[in-house]
Amino acid sequence: MAALELSRRGFGVAVLDWRANIGDKLCTGIIGKECADLWPPAPEHIHGGASSATVVSPYGKRYRIERPSAQAYIVDRVAYVNSVAERAQLAGAEYILNSRVTDIRVTGSNVIVTARAEEALNRYVCRIIIMASGFGSPLLRMVGFKSDPGGGDPGSNYLVGCQVNAIAPNLTETEVYLGSAAAVKSFAWLVPLSDSQALAGMAPRHRLNGQMTDFLSRLRSEDRISEVADRPRTWGIPIRPLSPSYADRTLVAGDAAGLVKPTTGGGIYYAFLSGRIAADAAQTAIDSGRYAAKDLRGYESAWKRVFGRELRIGSYARMLFETLSDDQIERLLDEFLSEEAIADYIGEDIAFDWHSNVILKALRHINIRRALTTLGPSAAPFVARLMQAGR
Ligand SMILES: Cc1cc2nc3c(=O)[nH]c(=O)nc-3n(C[C@H](O)[C@H](O)[C@H](O)COP(=O)(O)OP(=O)(O)OC[C@H]3O[C@@H](n4cnc5c(N)ncnc54)[C@H](O)[C@@H]3O)c2cc1C
Image 1 (cartoon, rainbow, N blue to C red):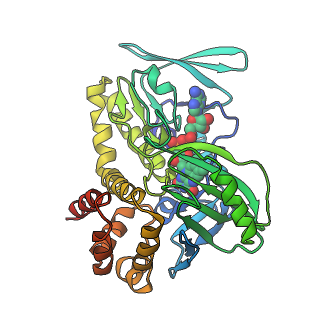
Image 2: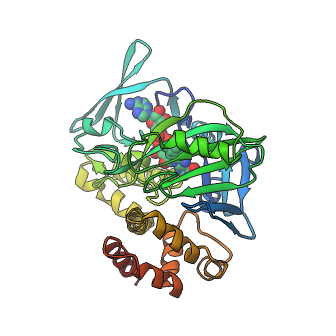
């Protein structure tokens, strides 16, 4: 998205990626309406619109949520992301694929990037770089960042995403599974694609420890899937933003900067938004000829203005959720997902990509508020922070 914006404005842009196929990374491909408005998926890349979903409680109670129109879309993630790259190339960006960046040197007058393509080492000299190198990128350390959003153990600042292709002939809508029998301190999913294909996955807070195997057995025994089509793959999902997210001649966007919804682990939309904001910041730097870290501060202020509050409230909501026992989740779901409560705090639409309003409206609902106050001392600080954020 950054490459598209900058090349549209007439700047010379090179995109280095070690993949041959841009966008081909582990992902479910659910995007909200807002993301689809920002970058509409081609009709042939949409597996389906999601106007309903089923939430399965820790003890197996099923809650169906339905809205009059699609709140999200399940897209062919590779084709969707690829479509941005295609447009960027048409606008003049040069894509250098199969090319792994191995070294980055920031000097007073430029940035020298070294990339390996097969046996050759190629050097590229530029004025500024935008790092959109995804989760746990070692490239961050090359430009002086001390930590990255993929650092430390799972449980510290990232989720362990795991997903497999499955066959699910009876599945018609997305199912979300909560509770320790699904994914500890997080959730698991079963998402229909086209032609009985589905994606089964989870994003636990800590190591997998057999949870995926157990989840797949459960889906089979409950007749939700008939078979698993390949081996589960895992990849990290950062849930804490990198700050600062800029350095001399460097801007960091998307997963590399930990710009992901802490509630669901969805990051495509914020990757797009931060890519656009990074393009603006790069243009400002080029126009003014000022590339020092202090001159790039505006980048972080800008993304914080757009979705900083979302990240903060999402993060409190996640911390609160992580304190809950299965019993507590079971009780809360009865309040949160009752028809009456949903009508009150969600209304016709769920702003899929702007969760904070739904979270804060839910907190104002009298029954939910009452239920939250019974959660005990470990949840209380996060309930308080959420209440405060909503004032
Ligand atoms: C299991 C799972 C399910 C998910 N489901 C969803 C979902 O349904 N909806 C949603 O919104 N988000 C989802 N996400 C998160 C989403 O995939 C990411 O937030 C999003 O892809 C971030 O985009 P990005 O461009 O920042 O990083 P990436 O998509 O990871 O792209 C980084 C790119 O950098 C390249 N790269 C890295 N290092 C180098 C190097 N040294 N040299 C050259 N190239 C390099 C990689 O090849 C890659 O192409 C999911 C994540 C996981 C793990």
